Image (cartoon, rainbow, N blue to C red; front, side, top):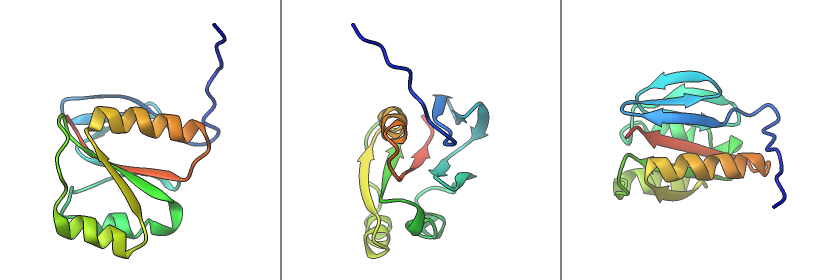
Length: 117
């Protein structure tokens, strides 16, 4: 088996998550989080579409982590992102964390808006 070390350059991967928090690049963030190449910010959830659309120039697409279980984001949220030219992929937050790290390691311009488990 061949093992390769993963390099994230200057980006900060998701190191862990738990009830009500995410750990990103060693920093614990309580509550929902928005991760983009520009940095980490708290996110007020699906009602805070402005925080996400403001990052449209930074990302090619956005992973949406819906918590412990996969769920559909509100239609208005999805429509606002699509109008801003942001592609999105919806999944449970644990899967979003893993996918974000893989895409980050590939050097992709990816963002993640995630609700904690």
